[in-house]
Length: 88
Image (cartoon, rainbow, N blue to C red; front, side, top):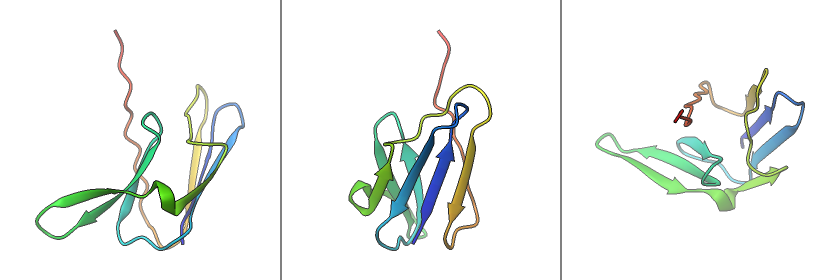
């Protein structure tokens, strides 16, 4: 299984625990409140909604000003963060 823990700049902790094994990596979209598994068949990458496979404590993570930390346990060796903000 997989467990992802995010602690925001204010010390609030969010934990997402997979209730089943996943074949690919996951994308967590806090704004849309979706967790997707990315499955690569060598030709295309398919995004499959996996919300039902995760138990969340404190809801979807929100990054705040200050130091935010991410930890992952399980058989995964890569964490990527893609900011989705913009300025007007």
